[in-house]
Each structure stands twice: as structure tokens, then as C-alpha cells.
Image (cartoon, rainbow, N blue to C red):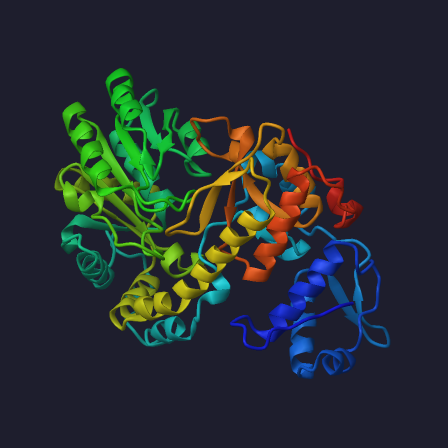
Length: 488
């Protein structure tokens, strides 16, 4: 077993050690049931503290790759058990790497490049918990449901947040939601009917295809050109399909990392006004910018015809479970009624705690700390793609957000690549999971949200070898998992 640590790296030593051992397990360099050196012995060999090695072993145990037993020591497992059962694993290519996928990632030690939510490991919860703790002796009504639109405290702080970002907002135009999905679903209830058409900027959302099916809506995807969308196709789609709304993710989306130019923002708004199409701006990831100056939000350019949707799942962490919608005045009353009917209220305890956290500058401090980490992960992904991928593979240049969109050569179908990658401990989001105007079988989304730079490099190297058709020893995750992976 060979371990080389970089002492001046921003990556903690224990994570470097754990990642290198994980790589050697995945590649078969360290065989199943191998007993690893004791923490004391390995620490001496690589000249680090015994605590760093012990913590690395703990991380590997959490991944399900090793187990520790008295009189035996730390041993590589013989095969990875799948605690989530065969159903979620087998259905991944169809249902997407959502909740069940992340449970699989934690239990099986898979390197997940599929999820684009904020990394919960980067969220320092002390300040957040402290704000919640202050409400222990608050009014009993703090533990009841909140008003349908949200608590006054949180509405005030969200209005201040948006105003600081250049979108002048008052509290009466905001409704608090449980996230972008619930915010958009409630909007569909008040502006669409079964059989209506909606336009969607591609690549779309993992949940959008299923949501539209449940509401019996027709989806028309709009492909991207350069950093924006195909405006000619958008104009034709508005004329021909007479859609009720167009859903845009002008800042980074959840797949490309691209930012729509200001001129295109103004033109798409002009087209929407001319055809009477409501514009929905999903800005959930807009706070995660690494380079360039931000363009004005769509809502700041046309507040009367744009619904602005935001979320704290990306700027803080998924577990906050809170988002918001900024609405034109004509839609707010109906929207509040829809939220109330759907039972999407969040208890005041959570809302007031979040409001105090925002008021104290908690989110700004969090972003100052994590944006450089995400940027380093972004850089590692770009460098690995450039170093290892064959020339036929292309990808978008990420200026913000947590993922890049990769186009594969015609000799490599993402569904087949997906199954091979899972068997070798790497997960991504196949293109077929998204609403897309192109051929989804030859595309995939790679996220850098959850992995350290070294893990990103190793994951891309494995994917590149699979794309090139190289043989990699496997299946590395054992028959329990390999037999469950299906591509339908």
C-alpha cells in the first residue's frame, strides 16, 4: 500500500490518506479482506500523526469499505452490502440520483458525481443550531404552523437578501416554500391546466419530467447555444406551442455551470412579453459564482412578468429545507392559497431560526468559506477532464454552480457507461434523466459538489478509461452490488 501526503495542501491529511486507500481498494491494488496496517504503524511509515490515520480509517468505515474488529484490526470488506435494497439500485437510471441514490453513496462508498446539492460536510452548523437554541423558551406558537406566506422575520430577511443582490424586493411579494421543487409545483397549480405546454431550458431538472407527467403537462425543451439558449428556437416554440410559461435557469442551472449573457436575458423577456408567456426564473444556485460579474436577474429586468424562485439548499445545505418565491402582485394571493391547500407550510421555529442566522451574516460567512473550496473542486474537475478525457469528449466551462455538462462520443452511450461506472465505484447523472433537446444517450452531468479534488481526479480518470474502452479490473464493489445494477 503506497500513501503519499501533501503537507501544504488545503485538503486535511486524513482525507488524503482515506482517498488514496479508497482508490487502491477500488482499483484492486488492495484486495478484499486485506488487513490494513495498524494506525500506529502506518503513521510511522508516512510520518503523520496516529490520529490522522485513525480518522482516515473511520472515514473508510463510514463508506462501507473497511471494518474494524478486535484482534483483527482494520480489514477491507469482502463485498459491499447494500442497505437500501435492490429496488432503488436497479431503478437509478430511470428515477435519478435523488434520495435513494445518496443513501447508496453513503452505504456503499461510491464516489458520487451525481448530486448538485450543497455539500452538507461543508456546513458548519454551530451558528445555525445556536439560533435555533435561542428559541427554546419562545412562545408555544413558535412550534405551530407558520402563516401560509411565511413568518414576518424570514420574509423580511429574504427581502433584504434579494435587494442586496440587486433585485429590489418588499416582504409582501415573497412566499416561503420548502424548496425550488415545491415552489414551482405550487405555481403550476395556479397557472396551468392538464394538456398545457411549458417551455424548459435544457438540460432541465431531474424532477421536472416526472412532475410534468403527474400534472399532465407537455414539455418542450430549448437547447443551449454558447452560454445561453437558442433564441430562434425559443421564438418559434412560443409562436407554435402557445405555452403557459417558460422555465429558465439563467445562472448556472443545475447541469452546465453557464451564465446567460445580459443581452439574451433582455431578448427572451421581450419575446415572452410579446407572446404573453409567464417567465419563471430558477435562481437556486445563483449565489455560487466563481468568476465574472453577475448579470442582472430576470426579475430585476421585468418584475411584472417574472416569478423568481430561490433556495437555501445550495447556498447553505440541503437540510435547511427552505426556499422562497418572489411573485408579481397579480399572482401572490392565488399562490398563497395554493401553498396553504398543499400543506407546504414550515414551522416558525425553523423560519425564525433561519431569519436570525441570515440577519447575523451567517450565510455570507458560509459562502466566503465554502466558495474557494467549491472553486478548487471545479478546477480539479476541469483539469482532470483536460488531462484524461479523449479529444471527442467536450464539456461546458463552469463559471458557477456545481456541475458541468459533458458530451460523449457517438461510440459511448451514457446508460452503458453508467452501469460500468457504478460497478467501479463512480456515479454520475446520465443525460437521459433530464429534459433535453439533444440526444440524451450521449451526454452526462458531472458534479463536483460532494468530492475533494483528489477524489474528483480519480473519478474522472476511471470514467475516461471506460470511455476509451480500456479494461479495468472489476466488478470492484462485489457481487451484491454488481448484480443489482440494471439499465432499462
